[in-house]
Image 1 (cartoon, rainbow, N blue to C red):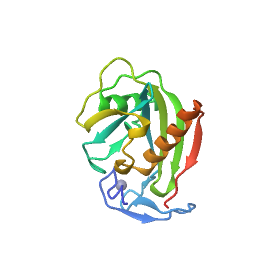
Image 2: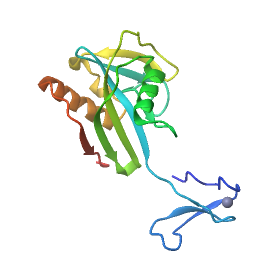
Image 3: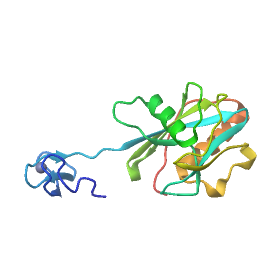
Length: 180
Ligand SMILES: [Zn+2]
């Protein structure tokens, strides 16, 4: 996955080499020799509930178009994790929610991503389909569309949430999801 194929400083082509004193391959400009570091991305989102039911969005965009997911997306520069989670929730579901509580941190080292998911309650405002979601619905835990979820990390979060909800205990946990 060559993200920095061209130098963002001077526009020349980059090459993937191990810079002197480094241990990893980096995209290095063949002209101005700037090293373009690539680091994991943080995905933030909310598990929004009303009573027992969970808000899911059916994706209007690739990847996994047509599959169900929690409202979540990449954190933007200069944004706090909570601001990002609330922004993604509004962008994808139109929902207004309560102040989010940290719920799960997942490491996905094979795709260089971390997911930080918060719990929040749906406020009175109605949710609706958006540019990013074909459909937005509340699902009772018994009716979660397990076979049509977009990502493994979302399935794990929902499995764990349903388990926690049955006990009425929601502590913050960190898990690693590896390739297999
Ligand atoms: Zn350059």
